[in-house]
Length: 86
Image (cartoon, rainbow, N blue to C red; front, side, top):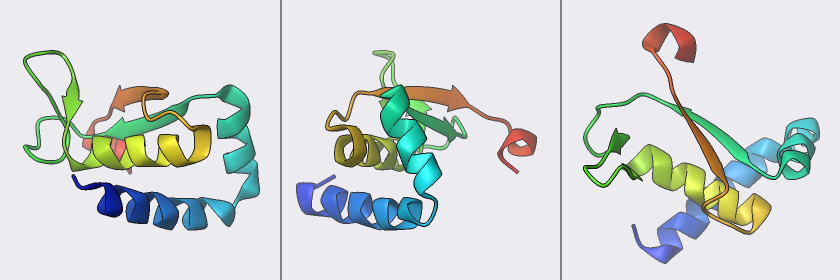
């Protein structure tokens, strides 16, 4: 994903998060982004053979972590079922 798109997505996410400052403060205090995602959807979220998450959903989480915490790798990924997501 190109850098401009990542920055744009991060900015959108931050604006959305700023509506609930308590959430933003909690993430900054913990020092880690918790990302819940579906798995097995090619292009969105899937575990590669190298055991590294790949796809749009994880890239969005990384962009937000980079914007909020200054490090795109400060993530705690959670695989969620459809029931858990909703």
